[in-house]
Amino acid sequence: MTTSPTDTSPAETLFRQGIDLSRQGRSDEAIAAWSQAVKLAPVFPHAHHLLGAELAHVQRYGDAVVHLTLAADQAPEMLAARVQLALLWLTLQSSAQAQAAAQPLLNLPEDSAYRHFGLALTALCTGDQAAAIQSLKDAQARAVDNAPLAADMNMLLQALLQAAGAVVSGETRKAPGEVDHQVAISLYAGRRT
Image (tube, rainbow, N blue to C red):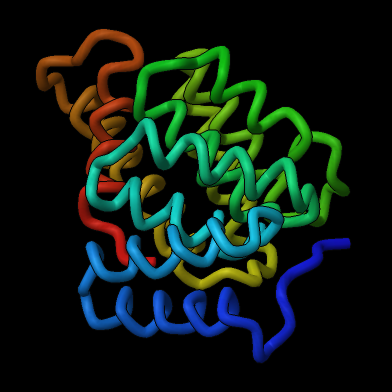
């Protein structure tokens, strides 16, 4: 069970301010608010999660890894943080870490979209784009409780389908894993939390 500061604590106030700032596209200020929130309340997985996602958005990947890892460690039930952590490791071309981050997702029930996200990310780590595409399609057929993450995974699916179409039509194929890395970077470069 996750714990977080009380609704009236300074950390919670900063957390909510960070959400508002992020929604306004004010990433630097959102990052500052969430950074202060986790300084005041180090065990605050929701703040670590959003801070990590925002840091990834502004391509501060090293810091993003730290906070997404803290979110996943502090609250293993925060499956979206784990998916984002695996995707971030994939972005950084670190298949071993991406697979390790996704591994707990593979133990979820068959009807969990997060299990299929984990299968897709694991397949991308091994260069199996066909399996990744199928797993993303399977995930879409299930309920997802996080609309931004569902949108990211849909963008990943569309990019993989486009890349697969390029291969079928005879266009130049990139080296194994290169498409996956570029797709992952484009997700983080353009995403909003």
